[in-house]
Amino acid sequence: MQPPSNLKSPLSLFRNGFTWVMGGLAFTLTILALLPLLAILAAIIKRGLPTLSWEVFIHLPAPVGMEGEPNGFANAIVGTLTMVGLGALFSIPLGVMTGVFLAEFAAGSAIANGVRFTTVILSSVPSVIVGVFAYGVLVITTKQFSAYAGGLALGVIMTPIIALTTEEALKLVPVHYRLGSAALGASKWETTVKTVIPCAIPAITTGVLLAVARAAGETAPLMFTALFSQFWQEGLMAPTPSLPVLIYNYASSPFEEQNAIAWTASLVLLMLVLAINLLSRLLIRRNV
Image (cartoon, rainbow, N blue to C red; front, side):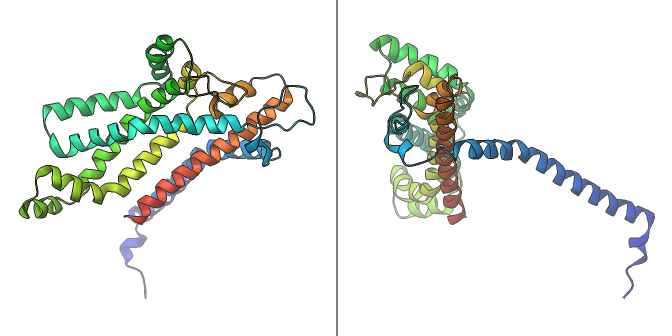
């Protein structure tokens, strides 16, 4: 069967050729955009994998020059998890309730617009400024660096992310769910708590995981608040080690063994953040 003659016209051939050229250009630009990420992954894996072993997860950083001593950053892993956990303790309730308020109780009002605008601004504030804020609130007040101060800084970073994702998650719940609950005599609060929020929990959980992934990789706020320590943390009101600060300190060290630990810690932190992001993607796909 012969193709229509209009497909062989110069204009049609030009359009088809232009489509192929633009498709090839888009593909090329996509590859170029991925190159920095692939280069970072390749460098971290190449330099971090050779020294990755179980020892790094169970031992403290070894003193410089102590050859043969087990070298690790178990204290930094524990410190990171501690401060992210402290930040999550107050950012999750605060962020979720803010999102519920914006989506369910003040939708379209001037108050909601103001709160939403403030939340968006807070989400874009540089993390170093958040660190300075936590430094002024807790470190200067208590006169010591601590896990609490680090947790506060990370919590401030996490809160707007959770609030905005919670609002969007609640907006995706079909309106007839609310109408059906109201028709059965449920109050606005009962409808929100027993009907709307349960439907949005997977999407809210995804937002929480994304906030945790963001907080786990922050360096600047922890330098102002938790500082660092080569030892196990002595308590929540003491300087606390973390993976991002360890990477910063050891990457700029003149000693090769510390540089190697910095690469390995980078690989561990990268795997942690990637695992959290993959988990959030799985939750999204499961509930689409």
